[in-house]
Length: 322
Ligand code: DP6
Image 1 (cartoon, rainbow, N blue to C red):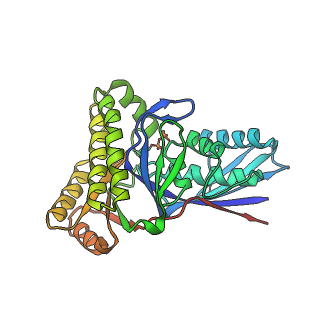
Image 2 (cartoon, helix red, strand yellow):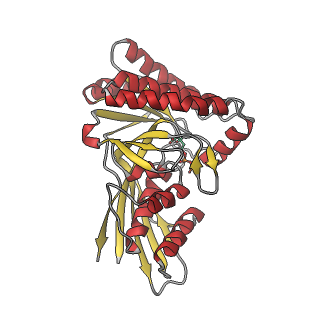
Image 3 (tube, rainbow, N blue to C red):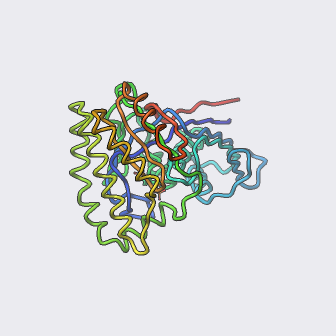
């Protein structure tokens, strides 16, 4: 039985950075993210009696990844299945450059492996064991299990949907400034920030009020308040990163030029808000009706940008192929 799963990336409005339990990959803070329709990952998993070792192929190339093997081992333990798996994954996301490829990657892998092992999958309310499995692969991945605006709770490590994709009247533009892999992975970057940044505690302490403001804004459909909370959370995360020793500077001079253009557009009366993760790419959130103005503004920059826009999307979905 071959199970195929698809998941879109998600972009955090209220940021996750730092872990409170590294062995379970539990986050130090709660987070809130928008799952996108694309780009994303499509993965098939098949447990095959004749295989003597797990096989993993990513974008047509054989690949070794400890996280993938750990995920398969967990699914075998949960299901009692004792067969090796063939995993084939197609990723339309730039990997390891601050574009959350691991989020869609582990969501699709976890769901496909779960279904291939015959475990019961309910897309709207994934079982806690599945959420934990996916989160151990990557802390942001459980958010891609659900569609629209999704909260990941710090205490439980579980996810719930705040707004369905149909109820999210937003578009997200991703301005890709560099196609290079990031020098410091999120995992290492988080460890360094928690251990050495005097501002990490303040970032973590401010998470509750930023999250509350964002949730209030979602309830009252106040896009400006939501965007402002997203920018506060982003600046505070980057401030904590920059204050690490040695500093973690994912934001580049190019990122700042894009951010300044977005601020200027906002001053002209178009409500657009930015966020940035562990890489130089800037993501801009706007209401659906302002997408073309936002794209025009970014195209007017002399910066060589690869611009992609995305709409809110569904959570991970899975089907069986004969
Ligand atoms: C900056 O989920 O990639 O994108 O749990 O170590 O795999 P691990 O980290 P990861 O971190 C994402 C961090 C972020 C902010 C966010 O998505 O909330």
